Image (cartoon, rainbow, N blue to C red; front, side, top):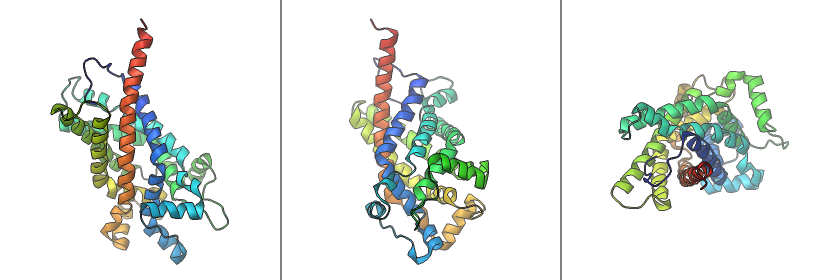
Length: 309
């Protein structure tokens, strides 16, 4: 990321890799209920059709959260958290932690990076991250989407049971279900998120609007979250619907998108927009602020460890 001063210790690739995963886990812990509400709103049209008129209706972000707490208990807001944290440690570490290294790779080690290079770096690390973390994303979405059954049971009893059940019933390929739309989504998200954050932070520092501190990180992260939500919401809804679907429900991600368009209209692609924005905005703020502080703290700790006197 931009903004390192000459007196600052430049963080190593390992520090960025570990720091990104840790910061993303902290951000997930804070914002997970918003993510769960977003998933429920995104699949609402689909679940209503499957369950009939008796399906639970969700209205708005906080209405969804309130309904879930009332009907399923407060723990339902964190359903899939274990898989979510597994996802962030494997996913964010790659897509965020390796972003600067990928920029250097494309620029052959030079300091300046054009917008095209930044977009290429974001697409590359986003695609790499999906290849590593897709099974954890599938399990997380399945957990967040599942509603307690009438007999009190659930679709999956635990994270491990979800991995085993999906692999048994749908084959190992089931764990990589929705990989293509997820690669598309995360290429878009990664570019929107990281490149926007990079550019906003760079402009703030270039014109001396703020110093390289928490308010600067907060502002850049908020802007990145809004831009990402606007650009990525349609692909995110299709990804969520497709990964949560049963075997044979949709023949492909494109078929899922066309079915949504035909049955629910174009507004279906922006279902859950407000929780998406609240979640991505708050997630970006917590993640980037934490990431910047972790990078600096771990770099200084490493420097002290190597040269204590």
